[in-house]
Image (cartoon, rainbow, N blue to C red; front, side, top):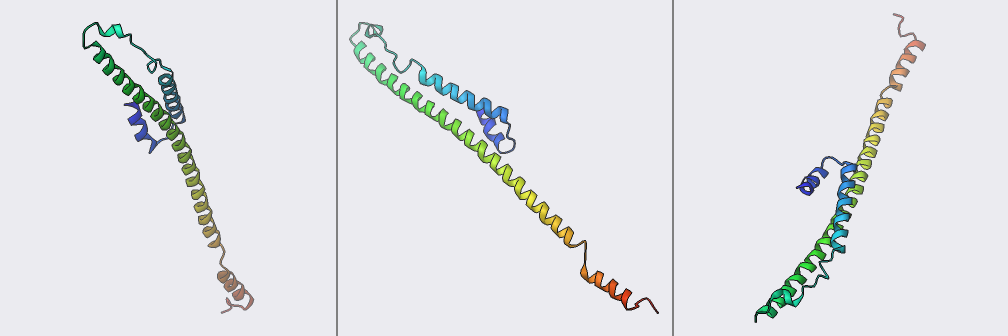
Length: 139
């Protein structure tokens, strides 16, 4: 299933084009379900025949229809919720990437500061200067 693979791939690769497709398809599917005529579908009582059990069949059909209609309403809400979750995950992963980049930049700056601190040693400079001033090479 495309959705299962998509969820697993979120942990490793964030492809904006795929996210846009997923979000668009989820919204489109939810809108189509929401706008479908299934909820208001009416079956004429004559469709159940003229037998004695037809009114009972009509009753059970009506109950089953209501269960499916409410289930589809829940599925529609789930699709919208999942779409919102995808959008939120996208933002959170982008923030995490930005944060990781920022952390990396700070670490690089810290390493650069350590390198700079090790380029110049006052002790060595003072030693060389003192030897030159006090004739350390006169031997």
